[in-house]
Image (cartoon, rainbow, N blue to C red):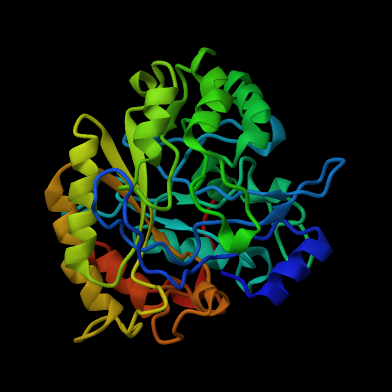
Length: 383
């Protein structure tokens, strides 16, 4: 989450930069099931300014990567959109393509972006990423707070999961799906049930269903849809969307959820409750992190009270559930937690300020059988 100062700065600059979010509330009571959904802090909402006639704040999206994996890069598409290509999948106890990440803000301005950053991530088993955008980042010249375009890097573009950010993106998404190179996966809205600091719009379930209905009437055999990713996965929003959208869920094999929770047992309980509502669907956790305002974990690779031990405890339990195909760790760039005003000690960043692997990334890589080390000399990813 960005402070109000940063939010105003982005608005004034016309930036597409994506603020992370953290809430003073760690959870909210579900209006339908009586359960308490998991917390929802950093990185799930993006703030950007529409480049059209009106300077309106657009909603962010979260994305994820798919259950089926493409081994060759996409051929590209209109507006720079490409299919999922992915990085290398580490051998080990995790399913193929299980470990993925989230990019939030300042990535293009960060030292080592994108070559060193992406090399560090893929060297430690990260496959795909979601970054709050329908287009690729190099097509968004205001994604960086400094206003410079992101570097063009085909492997990075190919590994992106694209998102229909909010109702204003739907027409462009229809064109994308019907274009010459449609994406393999497409997430439909990011956290329509939660407005970041009152700056991002919310969309009720019935309105979202009406807006997205066109996505289900067009041919989309090349694209697999992922459900809207809601801030409160065990609330009534997603079931209400299903009920309002005619036969939509017949065409949605994957449901998405966000979890910000420093207690592994609470994460597992939240996933199990979500699965109970959607027993016939595969699950992607498109935002996962222990970081929120009450997190006391250190960012060490191991040891009591560390994010490393959190990873070593939690990830095998998620894999053992058998119905979660992918997780997206937030965040893939440096220092997102500081922007959220979350505790500085609980920093889930996978790379440091130079783009090299942090102890957190090393722990995440090792849990799925990867090397868990930074690339020597900050070597670049190959195209």
